[in-house]
Image 1 (cartoon, helix red, strand yellow):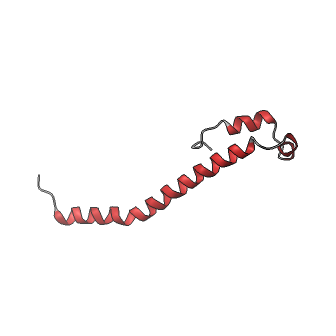
Image 2: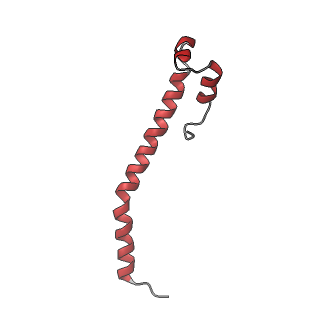
Image 3: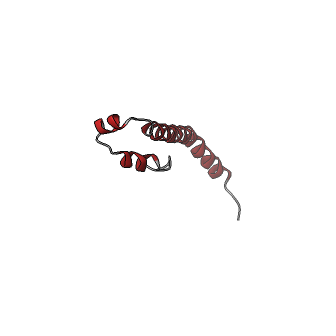
Length: 72
């Protein structure tokens, strides 16, 4: 089966055009994961009064903090 060079070139261009947005999405996802990880770690350093102000129990905070960074 012969390949069509023009079709291959179009395919390559289509991939190249998507690469920047794919790269941006990847970077955004990594940033979101880091934000979640940091937030969950910080949550466990809060005093009970601070958690109370946020309407969270220590158990709820621990549950949230135990989630893997990739889960919302």
